[in-house]
Length: 374
Image: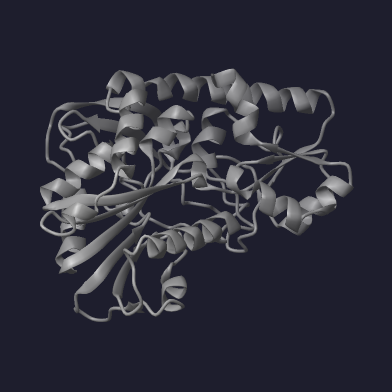
């Protein structure tokens, strides 16, 4: 690795806190019949000692992810977030918005349009810039934030939603690290980035999506200073107590990665040896590094189902595990379905009742691995 330069503050002082070795691109789903091995690339997280931003070291991959199906939990969270921002008086009918969304899909624009918030076209400035998991996909964090601020009116508001680094550290979500995701924000690190462009926080909301997701509202420092409340300070205090700015604390993810991979392999081998049939659900990008580090192949996990028709008929990157449809999973009548996306549990139980009526049971991967990795 050459000299690392922070994607946000351009600082050079920091250290690698998580190294997952060479991994396949998490968005590269080959045809199930495509021969391997798949190309692999280094996957590392670096923590900047200057601004505190956790970030991807390098990404030589080219985005190529088949479009997934938006989870109901994500839709429900968006609805709740819009309600709360309106209730706080920070969004009003007639406002003009520009959305920077995630390339994985999902949009708040229909929800905002229903409240008479209109999308800005062309090069006009907006009253609200909404970034919902979009900023993290930008290699140059400093330039990406500057672009968003430049499109905002003088008294406008920036809304940024992000999966909290505090959640990743607290819950041991080491496999949130993936190619294409360049930044992992603590609240303090994001505040540092905002301060560099002349913005200060107004308010923050916490949601249980992905174990802990934050929506932060900010404006130029000269605006709404009296409107700032204590919600941001509470988040920062909680994250400071968790010590997410300490590289020694964040690097604990390395040991958790080792333990959880070993635990998954051991558990699946035990199920196979006992004659218990296990299939997976959720061909998610965060499952890729876990399966590869745990050396899981179709002899241990014969298939993973996913609702995305674009992923069906392909295989998981770096493995020979095919991706099948939910209907195929139900017809196979597995005794256990291992769920790789915890937020889907209520949704899949409702949509696929035959799994349980046929005697099967759902096991959430986070619950399965939580005891061995504590």
